[in-house]
Image 1 (cartoon, rainbow, N blue to C red):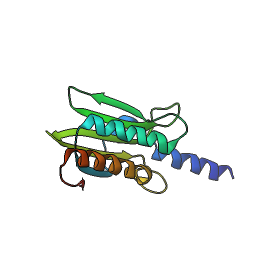
Image 2 (tube, rainbow, N blue to C red):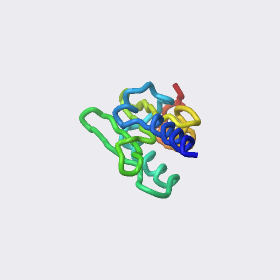
Image 3 (cartoon, rainbow, N blue to C red):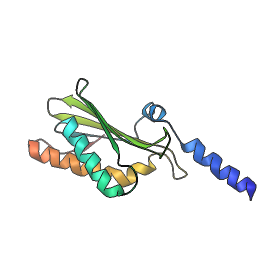
Length: 138
């Protein structure tokens, strides 16, 4: 019994990654969309807050000088991140989005399965408003 508990804790700890470690990994998912990086990130943060509905809301950080934004969620009282979404203005009217999430027993990118549709919805709204082409998964 005690050995099983130790193994469970070890598996949980192995999957945890600090925000900086998570950001150092290759993206689990990517897409290009029309629009502005800050508006797209704000839309995604709002939708994720609605979807998750409990605990701390996702954190939104915008760097206007670099034309980038991040939406991420930390595990309570730690610096380990469940997921990190990176938005960068890739052109006058295009935004590149990269998604990363901590590894779980279900594999890498597991948390993105539930939240990526919010990214796609916001990207489609921004693309429709701009009159640009379709959202492209990379």
